[in-house]
Image 1 (cartoon, rainbow, N blue to C red):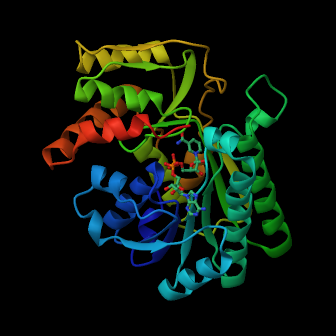
Image 2 (cartoon, rainbow, N blue to C red):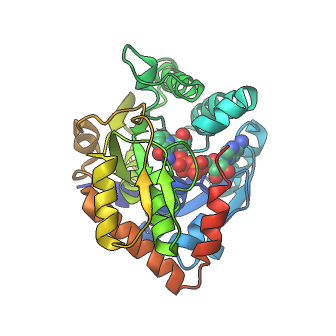
Length: 323
Ligand SMILES: NC(=O)c1ccc[n+]([C@@H]2O[C@H](COP(=O)([O-])OP(=O)(O)OC[C@H]3O[C@@H](n4cnc5c(N)ncnc54)[C@H](O)[C@@H]3O)[C@@H](O)[C@H]2O)c1
């Protein structure tokens, strides 16, 4: 059994909550009876509107993760009990702007840890990435983003050792599902969106991928922040390993006439089997199979359209997002 219900009635700071995983974290916290407090540099409720009806009611604090005073002010105002730290720039954005991205990804991480230390917050989860182990001894693609994520993990270990600040870092593989619209691995979700709005699209990579449905990821970040664990943990979240070819076959089951294909080199972060260690610690079953995640994505897009969301417009906007 997951311990997430222990967050009911508590205020949870969710950084980067205008983003894909953050939007799902906010939705789930809301359903659990917790109070999510969004902290994001953008006042953009588009992803929340895509997945929940009452997005306007969510507490939204605009702020930059590199501004520690602002973070402290927000934590004080809302009497924050737990932190889920997701704000970051992803691979292409880091490549496009190495200095700003290092400020956001590395300083952002130390600010979260320091906020927890100063305020005695002992429920803390944060996003690392499958790009972090790529910085080790393997053939995976080394990226500045991966270096930032490794740095965050190392800083979390020191905060636990020196000051007793516990944390759980989660390294998701490829997140997919409604709201996943930017970053180098967003293409499978963009392909599903294209099929739903009747557009042609090409996924720019092939090969084996670890697919993690976004709702499963959100559930894990919440469960990991719901209790004070002892130490600084880091877990892989590999989801469901599958080829891009299989993903396309599943897409075609829903959209037999879709003009979607895949081309290019294999994804530079190959799929690994799920070890289940994270699930054991936080008491959750395995991530859902890819079939179920794709079906949920299709349903999610259709439900959003039925609520009046302009999915075709959102699709066009999505195409311009990643540099
Ligand atoms: N999406 C994936 O496949 C994936 C895989 C592994 C790890 N992750 C990690 O999970 C986390 C969430 O990913 P996502 O896909 O939801 O990302 P996203 O790009 O959709 O959202 C990131 C959010 O961070 C916010 N942000 C950026 N700079 C900020 C700043 N200076 N101050 C405050 N907010 C700022 C953005 O406005 C955005 O809302 C990130 O840390 C990411 O690195 C994602």
